[in-house]
Amino acid sequence: MNKVMKEIFSASTLNTVLAVVASFVFGGVLIAFANENVQVAAGYLFARPADFFMAIWNSVFGAYDALFRGAVFNYKLDGIVAMVKPITETLAYATPITLSGLGLAVAFRSGLFNIGAPGQIMFGAMFAGWIGINLDLPFYIHFPIAVIAGVIGGALFGALVGFLRATTGANEVIVTIMFNYIAALLLGWLLKTPVLQAPGAVNPISAAVSDSAKYPLLFGEQFRVHTGFVMMLLAVVAVWWFLNRSSIGFQFRALGHNPNAAKTAGINIGLTFVLVMAVSGALSGLAGTTQILGTEKFLTTGVAASYGFDAITVALLGRNNPWGVLVAGILFGGLRAGAVTMQASQGVPIDIVLVVQSMIVLFIAAPPLVRAMFRLKAQKGGAQ
Image 1: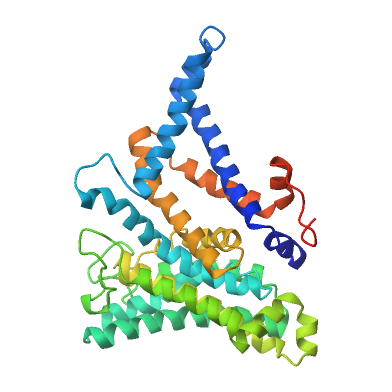
Image 2: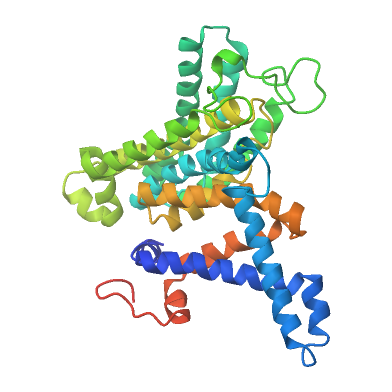
């Protein structure tokens, strides 16, 4: 596992960018293949080839233009608010994805392949949600307590994985996958009990979070982006400093490079396993707070959505660098925001975006494949 991860993360920035480009090219092929006008024009390809290639261009350009309008700037609408709303949607989606991606990057840099972000997001959301719903306090007390509770919830759920790895040698990949099921089933059960279920509700849904526990909106009621985005930016800076400037961060990186050497140097390997997973889980728990206290405001079984699994790709795409994770998180937030417009205006299924994301994973996980596609030479001293 470590050998594979080192090969992935040793790939150049150019290799990573080309992996994204190749994914969009592959998505364009699928868009053209599924387009009805392209299929019709293919029937008389040899008689009028220009029609066929024009149909391909219109289908692919139209889809990606709609993706841009839904994710960045919708120049076809009237009014500045409507025009810039897409970028705020992108930032709203990017916030939990980037936070959980940072958590996974911390684990990956430390040699632990954490797949438990979905469960850690759920635990963070449950802890923060309970505080946000049931306590009646002023904002300056209620809000920080709810956020801290969410961070603690994610940290505890992550630390338990580190504890099992340290004491029993249990593989963190298997354990975190199983813990995702535990978190999902526990959340589903609690939402059917008085602990979390809204009074008088039939469906598994909680009461609304108190206004005093919500993330304040950044640009008013017309936009969903909230101060959780600012907290995410601060987390990026904090994680960068932590990994590259702090002594504990050095221990994390040493563990990732060579556990045996780290042990010889006097680093407590067992304790470091627990700390790594606690920090990783805390960041995912913080992502959970941005969901329940910021975007959703109600606790449901879908509070984690697919953010935890998207975070794996974001961490890989960002090559475990906090700044790279930020860029990758915004990219994935844009894909989520733009997919709706792409489907509504062009009839392109949202599944195409999922295919693009999946292809990014494939190409990121196979640097030699990307190098072969673009005829690149392997880096000297890097992965061969």
